[in-house]
Amino acid sequence: MSANDKRVSLEALVSLCKRRGFIYPASEIYGGINGFWDYGPLGVQLKNNIRDDWWRHMVESPPLDENGEPLQIVGLDSSIIQNPKAWVASGHVGGFNDPMVDCKACKARFRADQIDDYACPRKPSKKPGEYDQCKLTEPREFNLMFETYVGAIKDDDSRAYLRPETAQGIFLNYKNILDTTRVKIPFGVAQIGKAFRNEVTPRNFVFRSREFEQMEMEWFCHPDEALKWYAFWKAERMRWWRGLGIDESNLRFRDHEPDELAHYSDACVDVEYLYPFTAPNFGELEGLAHRGCFDLTQHQEHSGQKLEYIDQETNERYMPNVIEPAAGLTRGVLVILCEAYAEEWVPKDGSDGGPQPAAPGANPPDGYEARTVMKFAPKLAPIKVAVFPLLKNKPELVQKSRDVFNELRQHWPCFFDQTGAIGRRYRRQDEIGTPFGVTIDFESLEDNTVTLRDRDTMQQERVAIRELSARVSAGLQA
Ligand code: ATP
Image (cartoon, rainbow, N blue to C red; front, top):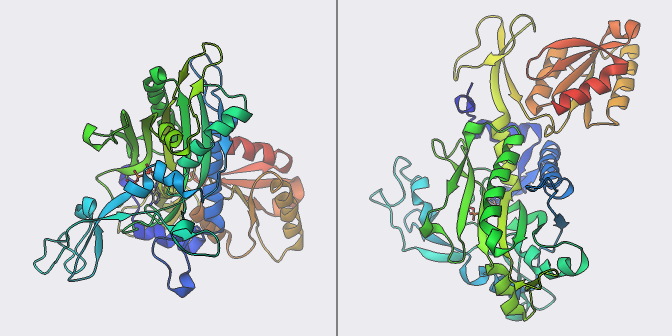
């Protein structure tokens, strides 16, 4: 089945995320705050799993170069608030703007460059400006940076900014890293962290929010090799996203047209995903930019510090070029949630025939019931194994289950559930994407075996307790 056939509605996803503790609206008891979200117990686990996989692929076990040598990439965690001069040099104070229009009739606000993506609030069948009562203003430039003040006095001298991207912290530490580590060009610096943009209209759940997380890496290289590395990272980034279990047909590249490129950029491409709210179009998930030597040159000029690279072997001096893969971590969480969500019909008695895709809007046939299942790649699933005593009022079953649970939870995040009918307990775990369920029954007391249930196929097999960890470990790596 193509992933396109089972596209989730955003409403169903938002509702599941709230109901099961993945993502909540921020400050909900006060009516929320537009563009801010809180990641609940399962959401933070999922986000951390994506984050850790990126970090492993970038910093701990980076890709190999053409000679089979691992690339040099080091990590960084820079401050969210930096000297405001850095944001003048980077161009954000002067130019990090979106064009905004207001409707004087209904008081709604839109991004002028994305007006076709909105519906008129008063006449949703029309775009803003198409309904005869709309009164749109001329577009005005709106700076997206959040301002704050450092210290006790609030004036122009104490004004500072919450970073709108993590990348600049890397450029600010480029010299420190060269001076204090043994990296040589080509090398990369990777960083994951929060970024803040006062978006004109945050929307589509966590896709466009005002506080979000990015995973960015600046790859510093010789200008003559920049295009080679651009092609390298383009292939590498797509490979990584696919490795998270995203269906190929839901991902694509979009090369930027020459008129979209910043004046300093030689090439830029987005990795795009087929989101439920953009379909049949795709929307951005990650940007990969060839930034030339723009950032280092700007910071050299504005700081007065020499940022040129001196090749120790050839004595060549040059300003490195930079290739920048800039991915959204929280947007990545949304993609993984969209991708994992499935509605299926499953046999009620767990017998013949496995799950089959549910026909939208129809009721399951006789003998079947509907289930929602999050088919996360096992490495991303927030909880890996759930343990169930068949009956909660049999102390010997509960005790044995606790023993199994205590063994498994030394290796993975596990969940113990003894409440409700076993079928309902399975469904609850399916809905949060737990790859394996282990049930302890009366047979277990006699022969030390348990039932191991697979989330996707729903097949159950008998496994000896002493082999359980190895069996689960193999399944999680599959
Ligand atoms: P867009 O065109 O969607 O506004 P952008 O091109 O401004 O994004 P970049 O500055 O290239 O985005 O940032 C890199 C990545 O950070 C994006 O690909 C996206 O995944 C993520 N990102 C950017 N803005 C937001 C936001 N407001 N909310 C969530 N993620 C974001």
